[in-house]
Each structure stands twice: as C-alpha cells, then as structure tokens.
Amino acid sequence: MKSPGQRNPPRFAGTTSGQSRLLIAFVIAAVICLRLLGHTTSAPTEYRGAESSAPAYVASSEVRKLAAASNLTADGERVLLSGQPQVMAAGAFDKACNVGHEDFITGCEFSGTPPSIYLFRVTEPSLAGLAEVTAAHEMLHVVWDSMSDQVHGAFEPLLDEEYTSHKATLGPRLDTYGKLSKAEWYSELHSIIGTEVAVLDPTLTAHYDSYLKDRAQLVAAGVQADRVLAVADDREYQLLKRLDSVKNVNSAQYSNLYAQYLAARDENSRLRFLANAPVDP
Image (cartoon, rainbow, N blue to C red; front, side):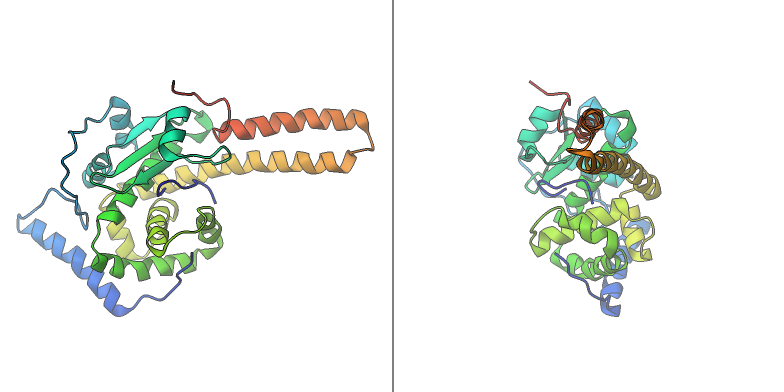
C-alpha cells in the first residue's frame, strides 16, 4: 500500500490504444534484446533504481526469509530490498505507517531515495501468505515509482482496461484508500492488479513476470486470507442482527447472543490486528 493503505476490499477507466500497446511492447522488447546482446544491467525491466547516499542496508534474516517466500524473481527481490524493508510488530508498525485505531493495514511504502517499506509481522496461522502478498504489493509500488512518465503513459491504458473488466471487485477495493491523486491511484492499481488479479493482458503478464515468479500462488494466498476475514465479518454481523431481533423480547436469549457477539467481535478484531497483537516496546 502506498503510504499507507488498507489491505482489504478514483476511477480512470479508458481504452487501450494500439500506440500504447506498441510503446510498451517496444520497451519490453528492447530490454530483451539488450540482454541477448550481453548488455544486461543490474536493474530489472522498466525499473530504474535511484542513487542513494544513505547508509548501506543489511536485510534481517526475517526480511530475507519473507523475500524468499514471496515468489519474487531475482529482479523482484532486488527491488524489494532497495526499499530497505523492515518487518515490525504492532506498536512500531503503527507508528511507522501512521496507522489509525480502526485501520487494517499490513504494509506501507514511502517514496524517496531510497524508498522505505514497512511490513506488519503477521503471526496468525489462518492468514498464512498475507505477509508475502503484502511484500509483493509494496515491492510493486517501488517499481511503479521508479518508472519514467513515458512508461507510465504506456501502462496506464492497460491498467484502465483491467480496472474496467474487474470494476465490481477493484472499485470497492480502491475505495478503501479514500481520496487519491491520479498518480497515487495508478500506483495502487498497479500493485493491486499485480497481486490480486489472476488473469491479465499478455503485456501486463510479461511485465509482472519480471518481478513475480508465481503470481497465481500470490493471488490464491490473498483470496484465502480475504475469505477468512470475510467469514469473521459475516459472523459478527449476523450475530448483531440476531441481537436486534430479540432485544426487549427475550432477556435470557439476548444475554446468550450478546456473549457470542462479543466473542465474535473480539475474534474479528484479533484477526485484523486491532487487539491482542504482539507489540514492540
């Protein structure tokens, strides 16, 4: 998420011109040709890392393990590490990402030289894979931030097409971020599509494949985590509805349902890291 943003479920819908497709195809083809000719650079496709005078970053073993589990290519891992990622527990993470009391955020990225990536330490077994999806999402922000305006202009119509095709899910998903500038909106869309939409335009697929080894696995992990959270949401909501239906009618039943509701609410809060999460000093 762009500094910061919600994990869960601005609109610039448009059509893709032949000229835009030709330009982005040319960009990818040019990189491939350079590699075939032996002129491989240390920067991944379309990624232009900025020079930095900041102290050398040394990734922790936890970050290295997360990077390895996130299905990143060598270029994708290089981009992620260029953001100097830090994995944090609740207290430190909330401060770094300016997380509000009711926000559910698992990562944020701040542009800069170098950029800064902060990732929440996910310890809930039922949300396995969420940390990896978040790491890939934030890595794609760094990719987008590093692109030239010309490359942005080539990609934006392709992203618009995907947004239009999946508006029923992507619309509410992007709405959770609140008011975004055009640049922020496209950065979020680029990260969300890359980690949450399984089937894409071939040009976008080739782009994301430069950074992600197995997008399908990342998408599946995100879907599973969302399903766990949706079930918890629904249980809390259904119990609340039942409470309203027996209020002032059956005090014994109300008391029993109220206890169930509190338990469901607490579990939902726990899953969303709003309570009982490990806290750094």
